[in-house]
Image (cartoon, rainbow, N blue to C red; front, side, top):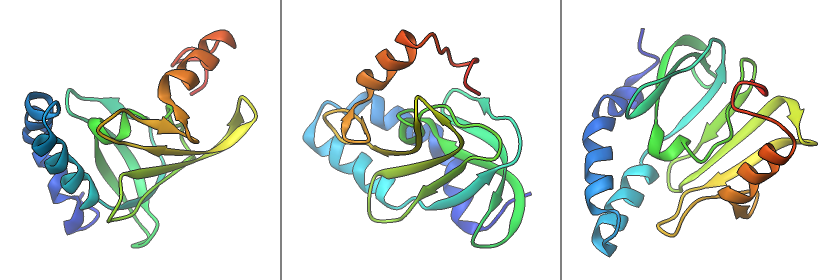
Length: 148
């Protein structure tokens, strides 16, 4: 079940990821990737477990704007900087930027809202490099499976 026509672009994630991986080191490649990510929009509540495909995450989710549930695919290049989400969490991404907002149902390390931004120089979460958050999770003994 497709939520709406704006999700058609998820099928081309494989193509975009190949372009991204082959050209992300160039200024032009970066601009193309940013333009692609700027065109994406989603506002969903996660309703089912996610599966990790090579180029996207797929999950059951409810589109908040349309009030409809169905399968949603989110590009891994954009969502990979977002901490692992769980059922009941909300993901927002507006057009015109590369920012993904994750609102956790339950706090993780004392935080419920994570603002992730993808840039050509690397991603950030709540203004800090992604690696900083990865280290915090490891130090707390949290693995990808333990904080789902």
